[in-house]
Amino acid sequence: MKTHYYLALIIIMSIGCAAQQNQEGEYTGLTYTASSRGLYEDIELSSEKISVLRERTSEVRTEIAMPIKEWMTILKMCNALPKNVAAVDENRLAVDAAIQGTLTLKGNSRAAETIIVIDHSNVPEEIRPLIDRIKTLANLVE
Image 1 (tube, helix red, strand yellow):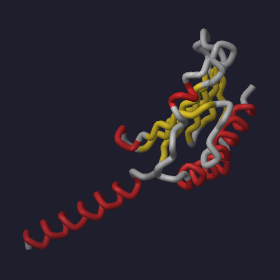
Image 2 (cartoon, one colour):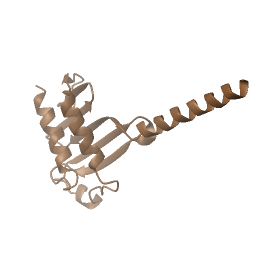
Image 3 (cartoon, helix red, strand yellow):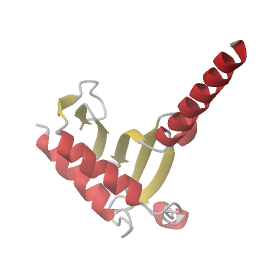
């Protein structure tokens, strides 16, 4: 009888671990920051809210609720990104006119975090739709 109990317990734990591993691929949020002398954007998106900080010296973030339909669209766009998104050439970011943008995709664990550094003014084609969508959502926050 105890053997059946332990066997059932092991099976249930195995199923729970497998389900947890499947969920680790999901994103819990993302952050996009772009900064130069005349520009500062810090945009955070999660399933709950859209949060924007537009001034480097301010600590007050402007927030609105994230529409669930928009969050699902963002998740689809994140999952559609190629696994080997090439960051912008470091030499292009070294130019004074280049504005560095950093897209951070946050997963369920620290290991699931992906950071992509791009030129804010010259976004690579494979991530342009996602960046444009992020900026559009940030414009909703006033």
